[in-house]
Length: 65
Image 1 (tube, rainbow, N blue to C red):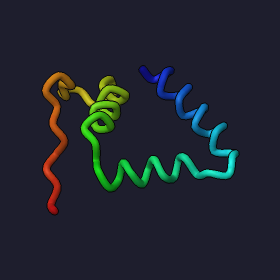
Image 2: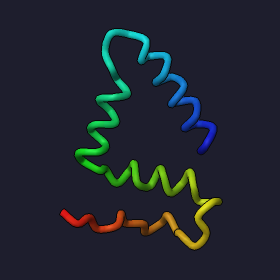
Image 3: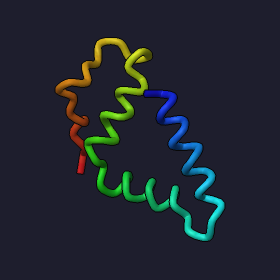
Image 4: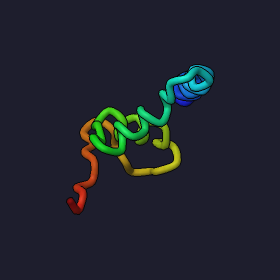
């Protein structure tokens, strides 16, 4: 999963050379809408670093909004 994420980020960096800021727009969308798939992706990437976190039924922490 880490290798796939790295490859996709590398591809995004190459596409960023063009006139449209793809990475900035994607990150702005993630910050505004906080999709569950992004939270699960982060948990999957760091599953070896954060012991005790299961991804199967993971829910993002409730925000203070």
